[in-house]
Image (cartoon, rainbow, N blue to C red; front, side, top):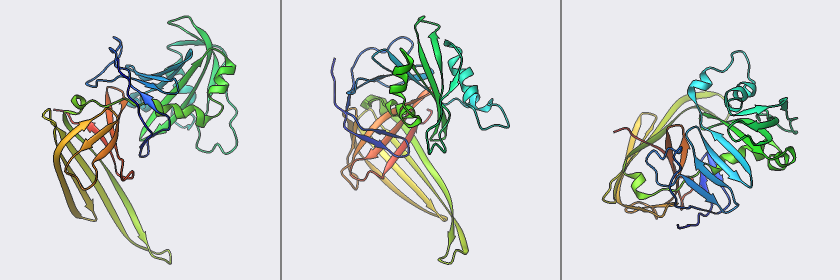
Length: 297
């Protein structure tokens, strides 16, 4: 068994970990779906342990269980129409199958809560274990997907200390981080983004329209070699950069040779339903990030 440290990692528009963590190398439980990655458990230095499960990331500490349910397009497509309040719907879909609950309450929102979803809570009993406690649930949209987050604690006081407000509750999404082994990378990965924008002059008059798109492709080979092609389209003009060289990883840092910078990237997998997203952030230029998914063979 080996533990390795992780310093702070910042992923653009996604995740921020401010505490160190370590990885414990141990066999994945039978109900975990590794889906091609080596490390399905992360032990954080603050005591929280994140584990990949089939429908959610399980985050546990001191008898507390937090679940980060993966975005589910089918579930989202069946949300009730003509309303913007979806928390009761997700309570029925995510909480009721696994817990027997008492009366459900809606937490009174704090000041300046615009854009923050409701927090539902109730006394609850885990149907599988028979364990009783107090459960809270909320919902957060992130990177185009809706995450349902639940926290099951021994009692109401523990829940309120754990989640004093919505911001404290949804920060648990940051624990969806899993280390990267070199073997996990072998194959083709791709990602990109597109933006449309309008131009206005100093007087506020409309003067034109523009568009940009970025496409990033990586191929990692079992020989330790890589190729990377980045294509940018800006107002009809295409530019392309290509790199190739060697790659290596120490689980939380990916090193790429023969680039225009030091070639060191903070790296981690984020678990999603049925797979993983690879996130890379350049350590020298932190604004340079890649969000990549594995291409089908």
